[in-house]
Image 1 (spheres, rainbow, N blue to C red):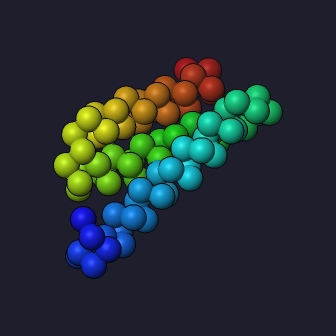
Image 2: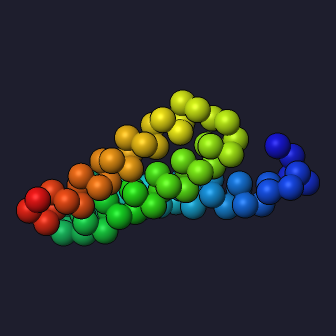
Length: 83
């Protein structure tokens, strides 16, 4: 997809939103400072953004991976609050 293609800007935004939120997630969880729940929320947001990016770009392997990351985010949020 070139920069001039329709939707290229939204694809780029999804890609980078997913990357930035995944980085923030990993730092929050690794820091072990009590912000793990926020980290799992960011993981879920990241998986949605990158999943949509992957779907639109026909990156099927990455899309499948995002389903598992989304599930990990939901499980992490649930387990964090004693589920």
